[in-house]
Length: 459
Picture 1: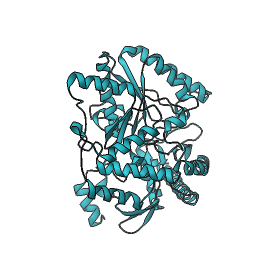
Picture 2 (picture 1 turned 30 degrees about the horizontal axis):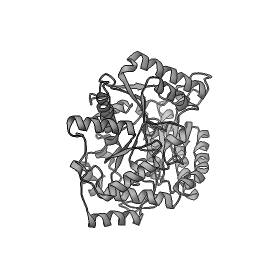
Picture 3 (picture 1 turned 180 degrees about the vertical axis):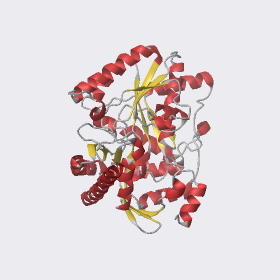
Picture 4 (picture 1 turned 90 degrees about the horizontal axis):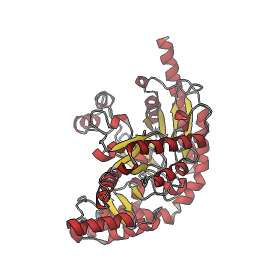
């Protein structure tokens, strides 16, 4: 039986990334408050928020400085836009800070309200700038299988996950997808990570040649793939990919929506993994998710093309009502100030070995084929046969079962296909990491028991 609040919820709210057919019988988890790495439901039960919400709540809940930054700005100037030559101090100051931190020589910052809008903007800028440069055929963008870049029409096209395309009439015709850099799943028998990286680079080279280098404009990549299952690139991957892009004059877009602002122990994942991006997309941890905000950081040569087009056309015809919203910008600025003051990069670097040790130990569990991760993000992939890496029949939804058991244990994690993802707030302590993995371990034990019972019933 659903509670009254659950019944009202399923009767009125259209839930993203949910099975809309089963929600009316299953009900929803309704949260009421949070503090630190914990959230509490309406019954008062506490949960470790093992996904930092949606990979985003880096500072955890209850940071009063962010609340006060929002309140102060709302009292002073609750709304102003950046259209038609208008501006305000929070947007200016935040753009200056992002330019300072950027993993490339940055010229300007364009503000959005989300990572999806940021990556949608990236695609529009690629098209616009190549028209400005007299290269109207150079428009195709290569993403990767299992990549996640958002859910607008453009960004969902870049996303390389079937469920984001099926019956949405996507992807757009200008988007292509290259191979997924998951060595454990897609590496050939006996192939080292370095050899796998070299093969993917060669395949990308051949793909660009087949499309026609004069038609391929950009390659977009997350440093570590998030919503595709927490896929860490193999040894030498970006070092092998980068020369191919340079050879064909293909720009590199680094989607830092998940990796940006400390998740991997550096301000940006590109720095951690040796990427040399032309442009960068950010969102999520930019405000520790306290308020929606995203951005695109661009270099001089793109800015110069935009200026030239404005001289020609008379306007840069792109923008959102909430681009650089003053309250969001004020919270973003305060968030970055807190990161620096508490040395969040140092904390992540210090705590990562323990997190990864506990994560990798789950690789010995009978239900787990691979435990993978980098920094403070990871996943365990459940398998029906460890030796053969054989996946379960998707209809059994074993990973989702493990996630449900974890919720019973007071832990929120996420099922992504056969993987169970873990991405806690960056402020998590060693003791909280232990509690998180103790609960996840019990959930895996319960999952194994459930699988055993199901097999005996079928037998």
